[in-house]
Length: 223
Image (cartoon, rainbow, N blue to C red; front, side, top):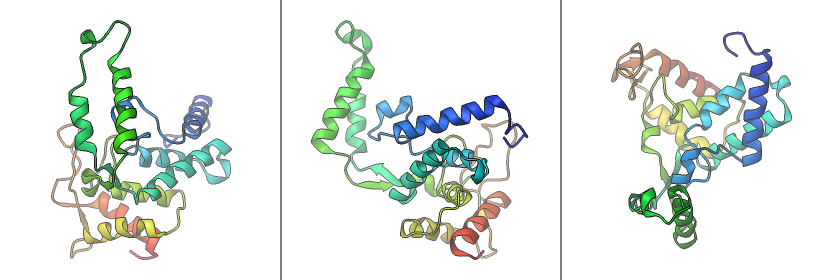
C-alpha cells in the first residue's frame, strides 16, 4: 500500500481476507497460541492496526472496521501492555514435560496433548492475574513481529482512538522516558540482525522521538 499498490486486486483481496479472519476469530489466531495460555496473539496487534490504518477511513469495509474495533478493544482492555499471565511459569513447566511424538499412542499428536493440558490447566487454575510484558517497556525502531508500548500507542492514534483511563499508565511510561533534551533513546535494537544498522542503542533516536511526539500530540494535545 505504501508503495502505491493500494488499488491492486491482490492487495484488496488479501486485506479483506485478513480483516475477515480477525472478525470471525475475535482476534489474531496463530499456530503459536496452541502453546500459550492466551487465546489470541497480543504481540502483533499494533502491526495489524497499522496495516488497516493505511486504508482511508471512508474506504474501510465493514469487516475492516470490525477488525479494527476488536484489535483496539484488546489493547485497551489490557492497558496496552498488561497481558502476561501470572501462571506463566507453571504453564511453562507443563510444556517442558510434553512427551515426544514417538512416546504417544498411535494417532495422537503432541499438539493435541498440549491442547488437552491447556484446557485442564485453565479449568483448574485460570489465567491468573495479568502482568506487564517486560519487552514492551523497551522502545525500539525498527521492530520485528513483536511490538512495544510506543508502537502500540502510535497504532491507536493512527485509527483515531481517543484518550481513556486505560492509556494513562502507558502514556506516563512514554513521558518518563523523555530525556532533558526532549528526545527518546533507542533501548531495543535489531542491529546485527538486519541488513543495515539503524541508529545506535543507548543514544537518542530521531525515529522514536518523532513517534513519541506524535503520540503525545494525539492523546495529550501537546508535544
